[in-house]
Image (cartoon, rainbow, N blue to C red; front, top):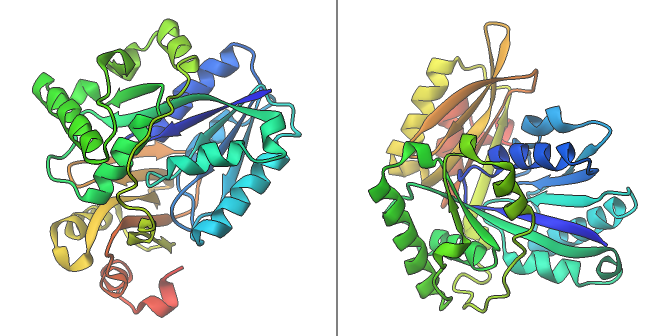
Length: 318
């Protein structure tokens, strides 16, 4: 049977960055892999970052977001049926940061998928320096994803202090307590800078499995509180993008902004921009398409569109 790995993590945790490293390790072992990526919004910003992996031993697939949960589940199931005929040794799924873990296990247990696939490793990526103040919804996704994980992988450890990491682990276990899930033992946590991950670490991750964990679905049916708004071909310079993104996070009139990510062109080159409330990164990438996606809760669409485009949303909002 084909093993299916799930790489989860709340918005901005670093799932795609880890997926690049993990996929390279699997291919170096001679495996043929399929990668399925989907995001909460209608435009997928993460998939282009993985294009370098595409080749004889790796295929990339995208599942479009921006639809209701039932439609999304049907698309997910249909995509896995198609991928089951491609001769993969392993399939890796990178879902949205606001992902319901039940969807993964329930789908794999449906016929005919249960004859082709089995759950492999579930890896939950957690930012080493979590914010202290987070919403009930954010804590639910953080805790429920960690509860089902065979390994909780701490990201950006090299940027955090020991106290920040300890605070993050305390936060994780408080969130687990809120959904009546057991605390995450240290034996299931891997915390070190990713540049220092060894083959033994990747072997551990490849074989970490998953956990069957009971918890209370405290935000059941409230996934729609999270939104994603995408804008194409914004005629903005890097300086202008930085200023507008900082404004989005700073001013409450736009709603609760959790992440902003996308691509822009500057000086003949293409760049990725990736921002949370505490950090903003820009990195050069291969040729792409200019797009900016704003993810959050209670988003004020008109105010955001006017800030980014200077015009009404009817003409510019996807």
